[in-house]
Every structure is written in structure tokens, then in C-alpha cells.
Image (cartoon, rainbow, N blue to C red; front, side, top):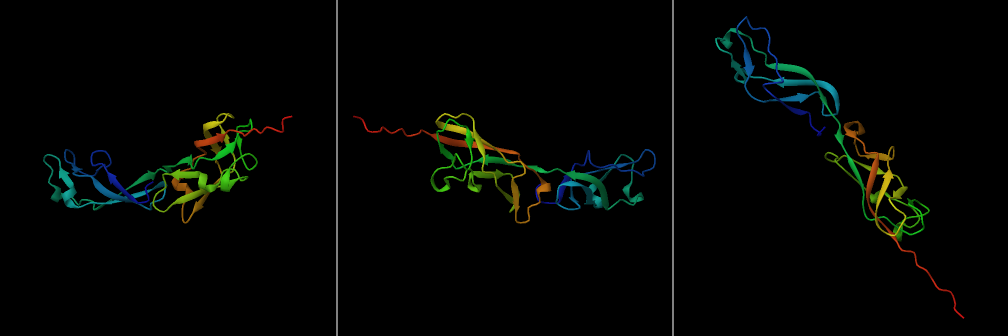
Length: 193
């Protein structure tokens, strides 16, 4: 899937001509520009326009003896485009012995107490103005200890299409990962006598 219905056919592998008398034949001379029925992913028809100049006669064949097709049809498939999801903008929490990152344990600053937010996700691979938002507040650090860490999140079923995005044109990601931070917990000293 690339948002268009265009496809380039290979002249040596994508065409089969029949109907010539024995010992005669022809081939297609150049890559032909064809069109799918529509630009969306899935199985569908392909149509290609051909001119007389697109044919090359085999030895002994006089093409003027034949009515050459000006249109060819076939079946083809547009496969969905893959998407990749990442966690961005360094989600941060304070060390609490847990690897969880959610509305209770993370985020700090402006997003305190809400966990991961839409701005913590980036999805790459959309075509044109297509896009999606992610609504998953929960994540998991790869360790509970303070420092710069890997954080991941299960986003399966948590994507919402924006605009006219058709999810059937894409292979939707089920997980996102990126870099986050667990900050050190402050320790205070109570009065000393």
C-alpha cells in the first residue's frame, strides 16, 4: 500500500499472450504502467493499456496479421503497509521498586498522575495525511532501578484512526517501546538530637 492505484508490470514475467498460430508469437517490449481497481489494500483487479508499439514480434511473425489487445486485465493484491510505534519524549517516574508506569506510578511534570499520554507515542509509516492516536496509559520499564531505561507498552486495540485513515491499509503495531527515565527517590533526614 502506498496510497496510489499505480503498479508497474514486468514485461518478461507479468504478461502471457495467446492466440497466435503455431510457431508465431510476440512479447511485451517494456514495463507497462497499470492500475489497480482502487488504491486500498486487498485483492483486486488490475488493468493495463497497451499500444501496438508495446509488442515485439517473435521471429517470422507479422503483427499486422493479428488484432492485438489494447487492454489487459489480471488479478493482483495490494498488501498492507507496516507501521512502527515508538515511545518518545522520555516518560519519567520516581523510583518506587516497581517496573510499572501507569496513572498511579508515572509521569512527572505536566503529565503527573496520568501515565503515558498521546504525546508519548509516535507511529511511523503512514501514507500522506493518514494517522492515528494511541490511548494507552500503561507501560513497563525493563528494570525497576533508577536510570535511563527501556519502556514498552502494549498498544493492541488502543489506536484510533485520524481523518479518513483506513486501518485495513496497514499492519497495525501491537507494542511500542522507547527510552524513559526512572529518577532517584529523595531521602530526607528527620530531626537529629
